[in-house]
Length: 54
Image (cartoon, rainbow, N blue to C red; front, side):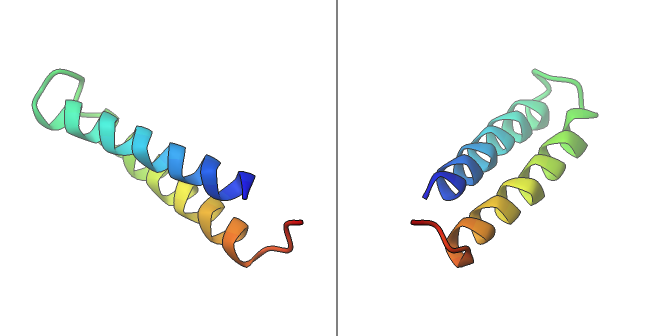
């Protein structure tokens, strides 16, 4: 359950960074950071969902 929550938190952070970089509040290069965070967060969420967490 902890991996799922951590993955969801990473994905929300990635969406926040992506949104701020799209409206030019942040540097556009942060789009790549948000994409990487989204993939890592999705991986953690999948690992938590299919893993053996007790």
